[in-house]
Image 1 (cartoon, protein in one colour):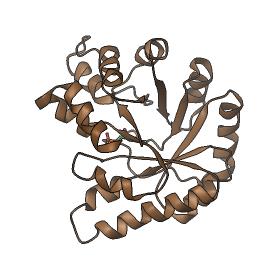
Image 2 (cartoon, rainbow, N blue to C red):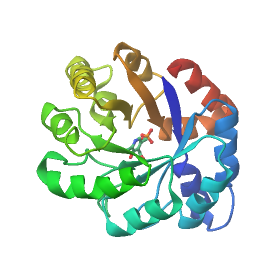
Image 3 (cartoon, protein in one colour):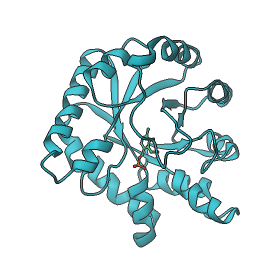
Image 4 (cartoon, protein in one colour):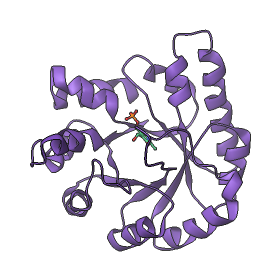
Length: 236
Ligand code: PXP
C-alpha cells in the first residue's frame, strides 16, 4: 500500500500565529523524503488551514503527487482545472465541522456528482470520491466516471478495540471488494493511526492510505521524518 500524507495540520499550526512557521512546503518535502508517495491537502472553502498559495507552490515543488481534497463547488473545480493536481478527492464540507464528518452522499446526488467529475477526468485528473463504506455509495460511485473511491475509515477508527470494531471493519472490507469488482480503485483514510492501521492489510487491493492527524501529532514527539518513516513501515 502507498502512503499519502495529509499536511493540513502543519498549516493549522502555522495559522495559529499567522506567520510562516512551520513551513508547509518544507514539511511536504520532508514527508516525501521519508516515504510519502503523495501529499494531500484540503483547500477548504473557509481556508482555515491550507491556503491557495500553499497549493500553488506545492504543485510546482512536489517530487511526488499532489492529491487535492475539495468540496463539490464551482470555485474548487475551477482551481483544480487550473492547477491540475495529480488527483482530487471530493469531500462533503460543512463550515462548522472540525474535520470531514461522514462521506460524500454520491447516491443522493448522482447527477450533480457525475457532471462535476467529467471535466476533471477529461482534464487528465484522477478523481476519487470520499464515501462511507456502504453498498449504496459504492454502487453509485461506480456510475460517476470517477476512477477511485476513498473509503471513510472514521467509524472503524473510532470503534477500534471495541466490540463494534469487527462490524465497522467488515463494512470496509466488503465495500472494497464490491468497488474492485465494479472497476474502481480503492483508497482509504480518516482517523487511521499507528495502532489501528494494521488491519488495512486485511483488505485486498487497497491502493493508498491518506493519513494526517496521527502523523503530525506523533511528529511533535519524534520529529516529522521519524513519524512518517514509522507509518510508512506499518503501511508498506
Ligand atoms: N481523507 C480525507 C478525505 C480527509 O478529509 C481526511 C482528513 O482531512 C483524511 C483522509 C485524513 O484524516 P486524518 O487526519 O484523520 O488522518
